[in-house]
Length: 227
Ligand code: CTP
Ligand code: CA
Image 1 (cartoon, rainbow, N blue to C red):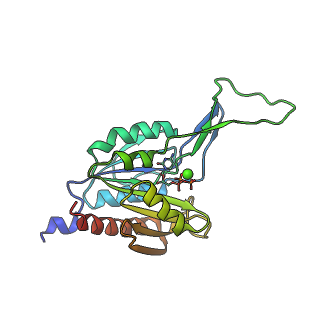
Image 2: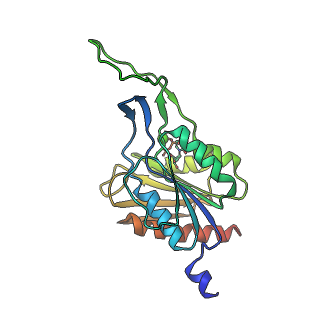
Image 3: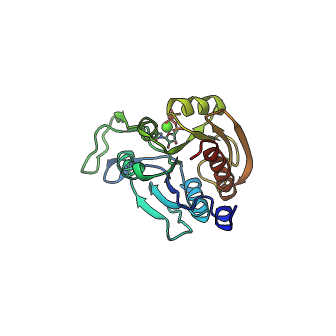
């Protein structure tokens, strides 16, 4: 094995990562979103760049910064924007990781003027967004496709269900109810599960260290699939 392969195992690979939350607008001053910080996805992007990959990040609204200036960053707001941006990049990507916390619902109606309060309750009707990851699973040709799962109960069971339903090569399961894991912090606790149901448990560690480990598993599994 030559020097370059050893240090840059992702050289020549195009990596596409989604990160952060999405925002679903209700009116000019209000939106629905979630607690995702973007840190896990950005750590995966930086780690991929360090391993020699050509990286594109499609990011929802986040204050987190990428370390590598050569990573291409596409900023989006809503789930629909993310769907469009991801599908534009998908056909010429080799590895795709969907770390973003995409809104499942958005307000059915958005208002161009600020809504005024009334004396009665407010019922906001919500409609489903598109499942981006599922659409990639259906469209994929040779891409290695990795999803995330955020769960608060029976994470392995739900995670395995998502792996199968969305036709993924692997899934990273997050138990967001556990201290030290999940959305906002600098640390995480995850389980990596590939489609052969080989399972790797990563105990509490920084998101940066977890990202490096996840890349080891992805590179191993891609070799097994001759990708
Ligand atoms: N995902 C997506 N588009 C959506 C919703 C989710 O691409 N509209 C992706 C996420 O980026 C993640 C994976 O699907 O990689 C799982 O997201 P998660 O919210 O855990 O699962 P859901 O399938 O949305 O199911 P639920 O929220 O009901 O558990
Ligand atoms: Ca969801």
